[in-house]
Image (cartoon, rainbow, N blue to C red; front, side, top):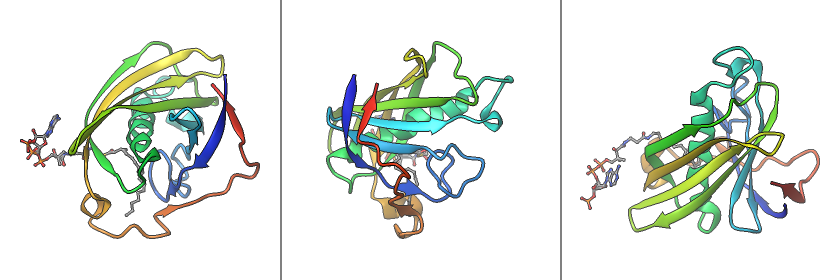
Length: 167
Ligand SMILES: CCCCC/C=C\C/C=C\C/C=C\C/C=C\CCCC(=O)SCCNC(=O)CCNC(=O)[C@H](O)C(C)(C)COP(=O)(O)OP(=O)(O)OC[C@H]1O[C@@H](n2cnc3c(N)ncnc32)[C@H](O)[C@@H]1OP(=O)(O)O
């Protein structure tokens, strides 16, 4: 199904998942959709492998962790969190040199914690990895011991603006 993109989220600078200046990272982009979910898109590379041709399970976990963790900011971009637990199920190999999508959503929230779920979707449309995660809400100044500078957290325009994403 095709969903309208409501907003592209900001990118980090050095983050292994979303950092635009991390040459070995996944350089993932995140889009808020009309259905209230977050979708991430990235190109897996040879240097993200465990076995040849297969993305390292830790990279898949990092992608799901960040996608679920970012989904909380769809309704309030001042909420940040740190992961307290993450449960991953690897159902199919994720190939290197592929464009993959990662979906994340929030399933529950209270004053201190939030929980969510997500999936990695292969180019074929098959679900390769699923996850559930729990996060503790924390002000960004407490997470980083620093300021949220425009270098560390910025809007990056796509070469071609994505209007819709097919999931
Ligand atoms: C400045 C620039 C920044 C720009 C950022 C750029 C790029 C970043 C990329 C993306 C950013 C966007 C969003 C991404 C979101 C997620 C992505 C990945 C996030 C991570 O990659 S993050 C790394 C891994 N993660 C950690 O690094 C956490 C390490 N850990 C701790 O730091 C502590 O563990 C802490 C603080 C969590 C708790 O410590 P604490 O001392 O406060 O804990 P304490 O025991 O006192 O618990 C207090 C109350 O929480 C309850 N509680 C605790 N744990 C619980 C659990 N598991 N389940 C249920 N309840 C729990 C207790 O029951 C108690 O409740 P009560 O008060 O009611 O008794």
